[in-house]
Image (cartoon, rainbow, N blue to C red; front, side, top):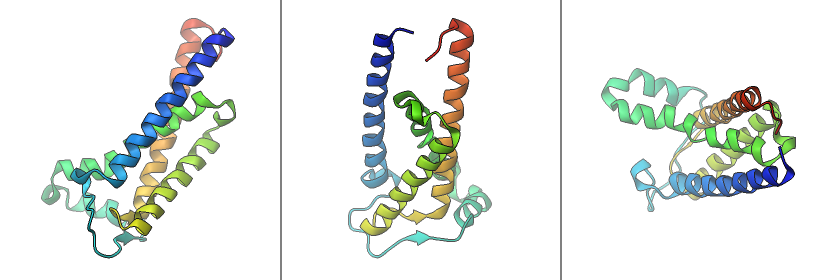
Length: 156
């Protein structure tokens, strides 16, 4: 692949990554449809591992499929782009462990901010689900990159 093409891919990756971070920030801190209240009283948090995941699963019929999907699947999907785009924008970020660790740290930072700003709910289960999403994004990148190499026989 030409150096110019690689540069264009990296620039597009950065633009996508910045757009993704802006959308993520909006959804996590301002989107009222996902339970963000501007005048939330007190702290809302869960530090018991797997408590909310179990609750959503046990009460899935009472809560409805939308609530379960938004909480469980949505938390995973929210970080898939994170794990997919990082290896595109940086060669040193082509390690499963680095991407997973950065996904964990990003999620931990978001949850901490939610706690401090009293926006949404700080939940240890969200950190687990978000980190899983980053890992799945990285795996998706590896699969797509392997397919591209197989099909076109070129390196990235």
